[in-house]
Length: 229
Image (cartoon, rainbow, N blue to C red; front, top):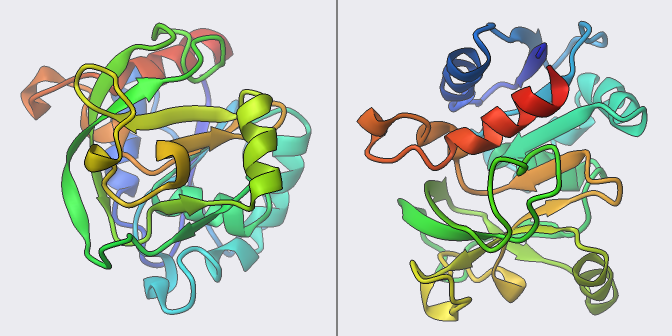
């Protein structure tokens, strides 16, 4: 699998996702600066976490206007897999590649801890190594991870299976008490209509090896390798 990682000023989880992709695929991804306009041949494009442009406007809003996003959008429309993690998720919504918006956490505080996610669908390029309904543990680290959409959009993404992950209890119950940011319906990640673009707030790249206390995030990258190699 050939992957490319987009680097923005303020990216701080790019090394983490580079390490994860290299460990799982056996191949280092190409690195692409956000001001570039061309992408190398790649099966997967990753927008990593961080604080692009310091989050001085809305999170991801300035990065969504970077020249490389036009190329990313064209590749996504052509069917390439695109993964946005944390700030990458914010950028994808601001660029119109994913529905909804990411707002400030409801308690207006930065949250950094392990959480549990329920896998909504195991029939996508990103989740084929999981089971539908499986509960996994991965970390979150964000201030603006509160996913929101208008009622019409929410009904559409729920009805068309575009919700990828939800915050849940260790037993798999969707409970607002364990929702780390107030996201509507406990939504932690969403797909586009074609389900080749995924954005999620948690960081699967930080739980790919037992030495990280958990390896539940590894199957996401293994799924992509299996599908795209």
